[in-house]
Length: 198
Image (tube, rainbow, N blue to C red; front, side, top):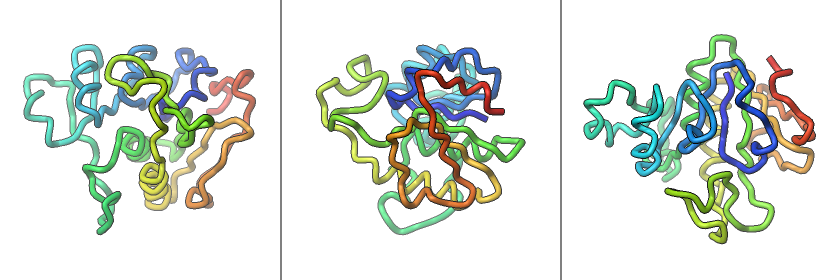
């Protein structure tokens, strides 16, 4: 199972040639054929609903798409907590995509690309920035603390699943992601081909 985020590091990868089950986020359907698309954002859901085979979104929005047989609810959170970032409403497409992949994998392995988390220039880090339904290129970067925490919870709960994060050498792994089932593949993204990892 391959999870595709929309961080700019992934633009160096040719993901179209990978013959594996893919879970992706929001506008990834513009460039890629994926098996499962997570759209926690309502605008990107509206954009994708007529173009993609299987889409997952928030339960609050399912009623509007009851006539679409390709729209499903995102998974329930597999834990409960009292902090704001433990509320399902504050989970975004990226954490939900990793949660969905953890539930769908049949080999207990999830490969992750494009989850950069951080910006290198304090501006938004997204391959779709400046396009429809996305922030302008000069907008400030999103604080990744919620994503880091939420994805860490997935790693913790699905501790029998191996998560392999493909990132370039200068990427900083969050401390909370340093778990026995989480591995970082330090690669030169210009030369790397994810297909060599099975």
